[in-house]
Image (spheres, rainbow, N blue to C red):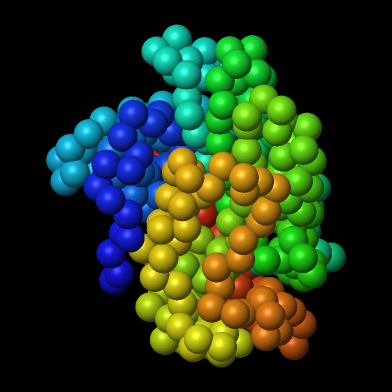
Length: 297
């Protein structure tokens, strides 16, 4: 594990919202902002998970993490949540991290399956960005948006078409609004991570594979390893902090050279047959069932 490379008070006074901040990459970035002095809001659909994360992070690092239940697929829910947050003071930053994904042959994909991903990644990310950005514009308050994408936005995402389409749209949103909202002091950038294993994502994108980088997931990465979470956190802090205010409209890959070497996507899955896909579907369904059980507890 590497260390955060910034002074401890770098983010002091900033108020940042991280969607999907209770688990995975969202939790990691929340921890980084908190450690550097920011007041952080995290939102998601599972309030108990958010509250547990907030308690654990504050017990470890001090500071303040607010847990907010919100289904970002519902624009009215987004507006209500942001109304509560902005009533306490304007946000300075938004991290669009909430997402969903699973691997599937597109010919096997249902409309419902497509919408399950697109409603979160495409619609939800726009709802959040629009609701925060328009508030900043009305208040005359400069702001900063980071969206978590993938390298697939550059070359497509076979077997992850709903996510690839949605994230490609957010990539264009980032570039478009970087121009449109620059006069208001609002910056938008994006991060395209390579493999940074987290349990939830791995069960849906690499079912049956280890999360420690010891499997075939690293085969096409020139650096020969998966990412270290602190490397991602350092980039997320760099883009959110003051000091690079001239940087906007960019999507930065952090993937050990994987995209440059071979595209960094799931094209290798084209070699799988029907039995392989049936087994993969079974493992993903089991992961989803476990997730639903946790939600109902």
